Length: 281
Image (cartoon, rainbow, N blue to C red; front, side, top):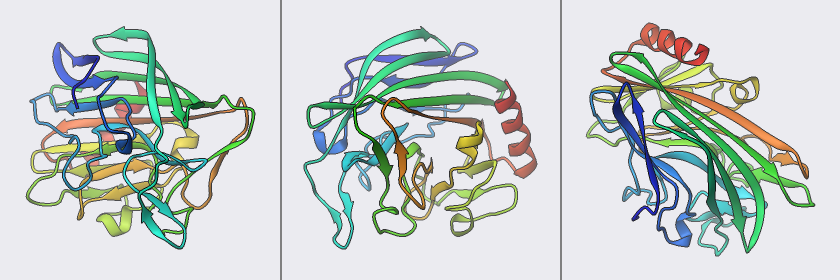
């Protein structure tokens, strides 16, 4: 996974994330830019890259398992009435250029390519902002446009027949520790309760860190949360849960997730207050 081009995100002069634009990855991992490592202000890592349990999990980024049958997630593809299957259908997100590149953020252009053709063009905007002396926020927006002459649609294993597996979109593979992290929203707690739920924010708390995720647009808040804690620690926002997401030629889908990265274990009130501050900035 040797990077060809990287940049370092900084908050108050401290490095908090490394963004890799051109990783050397095999095709079955669906090569794509990612953020790793991401750390708290105290330096605690809160991401994982290519872990043994899911080698296609790449820190923080955008991953979609089904764009008109093309896999931009990595690994096996879920096939209806057949299950997870190794297919030669992997796409790649290719970095084109930075429109803006500063220590605290960037604007990037990408091409989503599969089978030799460009399907989607993406503009990705990422910014890192200090919240307190123990917390900062990662503001991540992606806009994908259908650049083909035909309608495209985004699917997931859930829309292809696997209940509870509506992953695809923004995804954060968190740090795996001896004990599974706690996960909660303002009203619910535990993986079984928060997975698949819609909530203004969702928190995941590890041994000495907390991540608080929030959808920052009306469309993003309408997406259910994809959550794993027992098998591995990961949180995503589901683009295609109950049905496929269509994108007509020339149309654009936009999603914005703001994530609080905090030292220590936050309670509900602390998490809610910090994420409100982060989204309003």
